Length: 205
Image (cartoon, rainbow, N blue to C red; front, side, top):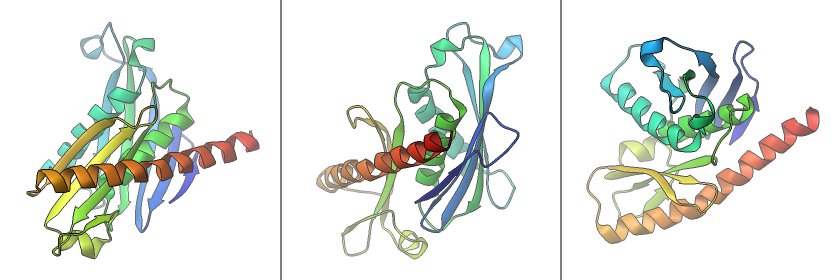
């Protein structure tokens, strides 16, 4: 994993993250004034905009937006910013496997860079079940194409509780629980990476 914060100049927070050969940029703007009809008196209104490399919106892109919005809403202390809006814009640059987990992790780093208050940070880890029944963490593009099942998990930094989880394809209960625990253990590496990135930029400041 490689990351650079403050990658974009015209945003309140931004990051570019590469996980393997998959690369995503994210910008965060907010809290901002928004239309009265979109305001919530209890919390900030979160908007996620996902742009694929091809540029044409698809049903899969809207699904990614929904997953990322629900995940980020659990992390952001939206009650501190009522009647405002927060916009997270995600741009896919390269997709060689694990695009959704890379996008979530990059969004988390951009939120940290923006200074928006958070309950916790989140770490996304993806895995597959290959043709031989083995679990492979953060698979390559070729491995994803031949996988029988894809699993995605997002954990919080406090208790490593599962925040978001979904699968593509059939999987047995035992295999699911094994994949869950392997990804939970791997999330420690992501959180350690966050600490290293934040420490690096705080030393510069």
